[in-house]
Structures are given as C-alpha cells and as structure tokens.
Image 1 (spheres, protein in one colour):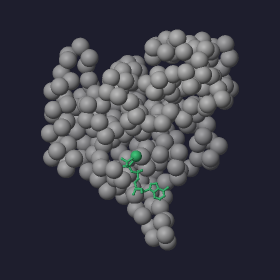
Image 2 (cartoon, rainbow, N blue to C red; image 1 turned 60 degrees about the vertical axis):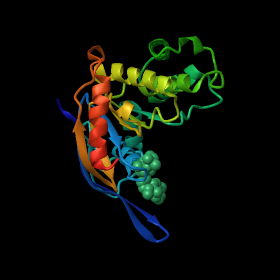
Image 3 (cartoon, rainbow, N blue to C red; image 1 turned 45 degrees about the horizontal axis):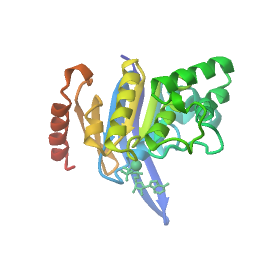
Length: 254
Ligand SMILES: Nc1ncnc2c1ncn2[C@@H]1O[C@H](COP(=O)(O)OP(=O)(O)OP(=O)(O)O)[C@@H](O)[C@H]1O
Ligand SMILES: [Mg+2]
C-alpha cells in the first residue's frame, strides 16, 4: 500500500508572550492508505496540533508534509482548502453544524461547494449516507431536533459526502456516552474497511483499541507506537485488544 501521508521533521512553534513554545518537535510519521490510526498521549502533548498541521488546517513552522502526493507547504491557501474540501473529511468533538441549516443541508453543503457533481447525485448520496449511519429518520429535521450521537453521525455523513481519502477526527467520541461512542466506532470501522484512511485523536482506550495502530505523543514527539492489527468484528477479541493496549499505555506512562 502507498503512503497517503508522509510527515518529515514537522515542527510547530507558537509564540506566547514573546517566548517560543515548541509544540511539535521534529515529528516523523508515515500513514499507509487504508490504515486506521489513533493518536493518544497526555493533554497538551500536541495531538490536536499534529492533526491540524498534517491536514493543512494550520500552517507548520518547519518540515514537510506530503498528503496524497501533494506537498502541503508548497500549496497556496486556495489549493490547500480545495484539497481539504475534496480529499479530507473532518470530525471533531463538537459537531460544528450550522444551526440555520437542516441536518441534510449541513451534510450536503461541502459537496455543493466542491461544484463537481450534479445536485441530484449529491442529494442521493446524502440520503444513502444518512441511511447507512442510521439517521435517515432525521432527513427533515433541523439540528436542534437530534441527540448528540445522532449529530455526530451527521458530521460523519458530512465528512464523507465528497468521498475523501482520509478522515481526521479530533476526539470524535469525546462528547458521547459509551454506547454512542461504540456505534460511531462501528461506522468508522465500516468506512475504513472500504478503504478510507482514518486518523483519530482519542483519550479513550476502548476507542483506540478498535483502531489498527496507536501512536503515543509526549511533549511534541511521537514516543512510541503500538501495532494492534486490523480489528475484526467477527473475532470478538476486543477485550484482549483493550487489555494489551492498556498494558502498553501504562508502560508508556499513561
Ligand atoms: N494557538 C495556540 N497558541 C499558543 N499555544 C497553543 C495554541 N494551540 C495549542 N497551543 C499549545 O500547544 C500545546 C499542545 O496543544 P494541543 O491542543 O495540540 O494538545 P493536545 O495533545 O491536543 O491536548 P488535549 O488532549 O488537551 O486536547 C499546548 O501546550 C497548548 O497550550
Ligand atoms: Mg486536543
């Protein structure tokens, strides 16, 4: 499999009160197409910053990021936002759905912005995604008429509407109860089985244990990684995966 993401000596430095704060310190990382990755580590270790910089949402201070053959640091703002729009999907802890639009309109919006498909086809796909994520009964609702778990499913539909190559999630299950979190992970698992690469930040061992490879960040660096291998729903070894991962995390200082 090709590397969809190649990160070389990535640095991010903020200036806070005239002092430099080195948040990412020469991070190196390769993500293969179709991988499912979790990023863990203490609060403030730079997990979100890593996600924002490898996805071009934030501007790196130094280093190289190659996403799907595009060298991000060489792209203009316009090309970068076009790349994000068409090839990346984002899911955050807070759903960031637009309040004045209906749920389905929120899902469809970025496909209209991409302007490369007929509206009829986009609408059809939105309906299919809503069916698939179990929220089709909300097709006529606005966002005040849905639960947190349902809204997070809607953001997954929104992230998928342009058929991205990768989904980035920053604590996508962080605001959900464990049942909803589990359901979201099942949706991610299915999407990943179909070939979409997924990279999520999480504090939840149970969530991370369903991914394939776990990176552990400490103080702006990836200090270790644990290969769990693909999760197979039919093998029912989730308890075993969780306990292996927990032991490794403890050894990492979790
Ligand atoms: N815009 C910013 N300006 C200055 N410092 C920032 C900025 N964004 C993040 N930081 C700092 O960078 C460090 C890493 O932040 P980041 O949000 O990446 O951590 P995190 O690992 O995602 O933490 P958490 O688990 O709490 O979400 C922190 O010390 C934070 O205060
Ligand atoms: Mg964070």
